[in-house]
Amino acid sequence: MKLNDKLYKMINDQIKHELESAYIYYSMVSYFVAEGLDGMAQWMTAQAREEMLHAGKFFNFIGERGGKVELQNLKIIKTNWTSPLEAFQDALAHEEFITGKINDLMKVAIEVNDFPAKVLLDWFVSEQVEEEANVGKVVQTLARVGDSGNGLFMLDRELGQRVFTPPPAQGE
Ligand SMILES: [Fe+2]
Ligand SMILES: [Fe+2]
Image 1 (cartoon, rainbow, N blue to C red):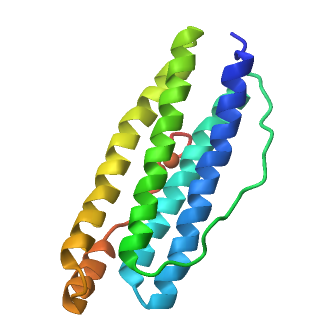
Image 2 (image 1 turned 135 degrees about the horizontal axis):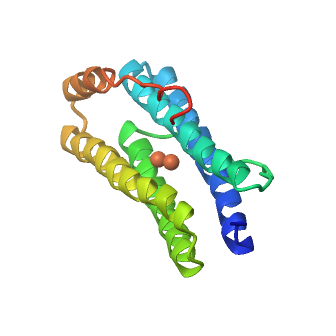
Image 3 (image 1 turned 90 degrees about the vertical axis):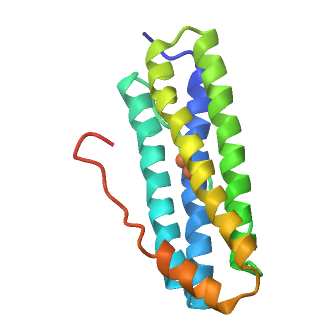
């Protein structure tokens, strides 16, 4: 079944959004590294790498459906933050933006009865719930920690325990 034109365009755009997510998160990694917050840098690196996998899922889907991906320019809006809280708040706002995009995609997949797209998007719907919850949790903790250097130190150590697990071959 050929991909519907509108759905193709939205999925193609979503590849850009996911790669842009990785780009934004790597920008945050550079901020954390410069601040000596190695744990947060590691956490955000894992986040960025996950985003590249997300882009890969949409990329493969277009290919499998006989389409051709057209890559677009990535925009980087921000390269510095005034606090880890501000960075994680931006990350949360960005995830909410992405959730909106996934929901729009789902609406169109349903509209045009594209069941394989719906299956792919089901995964992303759950993933976004998890993403918002994880980033939201860090925002909440950072807000509570406030200016406490000790609290920040502890949280940085905790976040540094996040490991990126690459998916099994073929899987993603
Ligand atoms: Fe994503
Ligand atoms: Fe994400």
